[in-house]
Length: 618
Ligand SMILES: [Ca+2]
Ligand SMILES: [Ca+2]
Ligand SMILES: [Ca+2]
Ligand SMILES: [Ca+2]
Image (tube, rainbow, N blue to C red; front, side, top):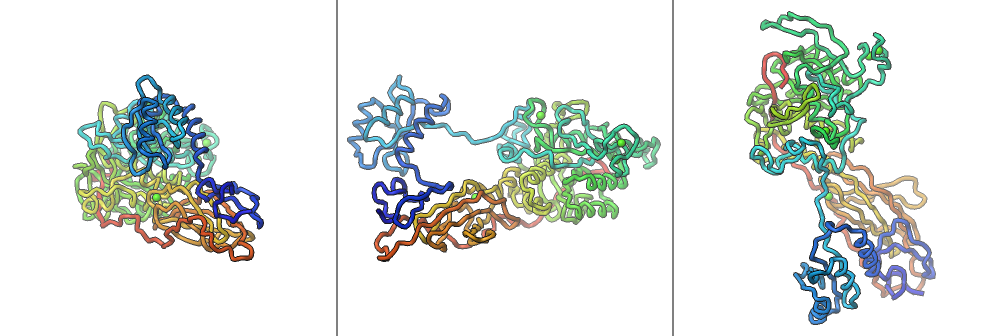
């Protein structure tokens, strides 16, 4: 017989912190341990785990010539010195702020594992363990040109670049590498759809069931359009805009220019396949829609047909690495059609160093909520010299100088780097695709806001030349990472403790939801501040089971829900009032609501891409 929570020796939960979620029946007997139990490990448990982990650890996973030793708290300095002397090891230093922890150098000839075992065997030692080497978790692909792709991972390796002036794709890839469920239409010069680094990521029109029967099987108005369409109606224009070599549109969106294949590789070259480059998305479906001829010319009507085609065939993103200064209502209406269908459009700001706030460039400068206008930065995070800008109308920037990508005929631009806001735009399309992969519950405006809010604010560009910052794939993708490892425990009849892993990097806080026994649904009971990882629910009744779930939120939206976790409160003490036993420390968590604006709300700037009076690819 014992009082719950009083921690008498041998009582359930007393070996650790008392936070294990054992529940008891009314006479104090242990009756259950919930599956979501989280208890602090006992010393014996820790020692067992240390030894089994160490046996499995390969050399190289821990630092040679060093171990960590934790002496028992009652051990004094001379006893500690005696232990070191007995093993003939040398203390290197005490470890900050934790009593009895020392970094120790084993004697010459003694392995790390042997040293750990020897210290473990000494009665003055609580535990010893190897000094494991911890690496930042990153996903670097094996594609042979990846080291030259500074835009994805800039270590300063290229053209006097500044480390970190990149979109952090290598960190975002730990979270998602994209999905074949996301289709991105590339309206451009066509694509080398047989390219070894692209072929697995090319869209296929499943509705067009026969590619050679001269029948429009899916009834979309295009015959045998199995991998996209070539909308070009004129192969050669003269200098007066007269078509001297007309051509019929066809089902072969082959790239006879190079630009579209280049753009496609930035979005979705297959990553980690040991060849070529890595795209922002390793998995995606790229829909090739050719509108530019081999001279680099097209017409508004071809662009509009391509936009409507993309929307009707299920593209979620359209990449428009082109633009022109003439306003076309038809183009505007087509993009508004895309907007009403929930299709996101990334558009190049232009390459003429001009202010799009004053001289709008279309489609980037159309005032439609589904369009994001993209400027170019260089390997030092400066605005590229050619890049258009506009603190109101250009939203973000992305790398657009010294860019390497795929080229037609299974090639790469490895001897000739390209520059242009055309190349910045597909980085944004790719990150939008990563976001659509992970945040499937977001609409396109939430996707756009996430890209903008979690770009990197650059003091000499943001607010001055562009509205927000330089694209950051990792900050965007991790902003509302789902909380994991939710666990609930109770040692008092009036309280349940929750803990979880705070994985989100851009949350304003966490919302706690609870469902009591017999209740049909969850209801929000609290909202805690950013970076919280625990909560004490003090509004529970004795001998009741409650189930919880948690999600992160910010002003853009909510994360997905954590796992669900349950705990049962112990019975209230019978008679006697139970006084006196002041029980387990429940860490009183800050329950105040937080309205942190986790975001930078910026003043505005914009940038653009392009040249030419006719629509040209940028
Ligand atoms: Ca068809
Ligand atoms: Ca057909
Ligand atoms: Ca590759
Ligand atoms: Ca956080």
